Image 1 (cartoon, rainbow, N blue to C red):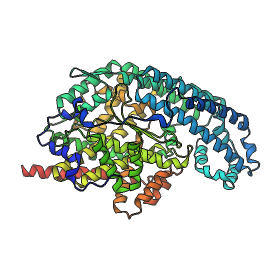
Image 2 (spheres, one colour):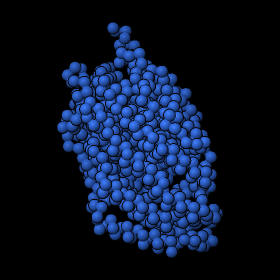
Image 3 (spheres, rainbow, N blue to C red):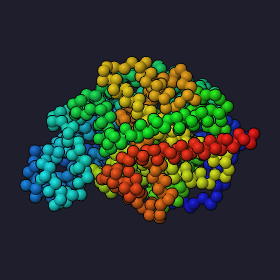
Image 4 (cartoon, one colour):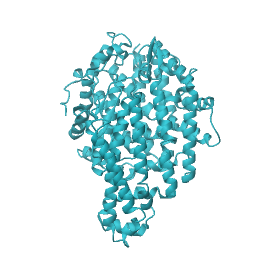
Length: 635
């Protein structure tokens, strides 16, 4: 854990804000020349998983996994009911579940290694082949294990409950209860095997095509050919002309490739429709709600609350921002434009590390200690590189190992918040590992809680030490924009997906129709102060969640609103809050959201719950409006 900073003037972000009072040239921080100021950026050390693609250990684990899968089939297929022995054989079934769990951990380690190696450079043909080969091998091995959860779900409820109550099988009760929720949508074994094996040449292949296409795209901006991440980064530049040229470059390349992205979207939407129809899901998002262990009514209430709040949040904020920038309306490329007083200097990696660990440590020394391991042990890959996957994530790998974080760090304040976000995921994943491979994974809605809470801790630490109204406004505005991007934008994404998947049930969507839906939901969510210029209709193309995890996006809004309410409890709570919070994270996937939130007096099924979270954002905008009026009155 790092020592707490004694005063704000010691903080690197203060120096950056101070420099914005006329010392730095607009946009200088965002350019490649600023990379030297970032310091030494860490890259992954994946040897904790395997020494390399040709590792003898990797080869041995593949062979061991295949033999173990064959042995489980031989020993248990068609025999799980017999293990119960009239309800008295829980110990035998518990042993079978332990074997299944251990094999899942080994398979997870192998596929995690291949995924991380591939994410580090998706353009490398050797890594592409290795990743594809491992996917095929793991799919073939895991298909031999499909019988296990399917057969568990055919066990008699009363006999299984007796076995759970009277044996070590009770340890796996949360997993078994979650598994039973899948029972109504379970198909006959051969069909399940077919769906599973064809995933490599169906959804998996289209996912990979999207990844490799997006990674290979180049956008010509000001004479430079840039990949996606640096081009998107230009939309944060102080220079409005640079933002416009970056947006035009994005639109040009997306339009040139829109036929391919339209085909990918149509194909995957149809693939999902086929799967949903066979399994018996009615609504287009029902399978996601089930996977998230959240009720449709709860999600519907969240979506309705956010859409109803659009005028009070995003519409109001962007109108105010337009005034700040001296405009009647903001072009879409100005949506995330920095304010004149926002930081213009590069924030070095060491400063970012200290910022986040100090904020974490002030909340909980244990939390900071866990986060510190990511820096000390090579669990983070931070630099922007050719071929590297865009964006950021924390990959949990498996409980017998540890998570790995991918960033594309470029020294922006938002990059520091992204680091805080992903470290929140990482801490959550480390704490949940105690639950083991079957119960450590957390539903997406709750998985975003720790990440957004980590961001909030970092933001509040900076805000509390802001030395003047000017700096406070810059920090508040930046946070409001992040929250709009997390809540309003993600619910707009969810509505876009709902319309796309609903219309796809009636036939293919053209590129033009996809663009129309995109513009409609963006206009509704962003409001009249944002002018959507020609070219923006293609910007749906690059959102990876639409491809990799349909309807994932509402989890961000769920997490942000939940954390706003949770943080309000924290500010009023006694000293035991941090311990209760870490206990909640350590529960992994063993508890429903109602049970997890009960110790904090919160209930996501309460119709007023979402309004509480949204009022936090509204309160920040209220403060910005008050500051704006005071500034106008002084002129």
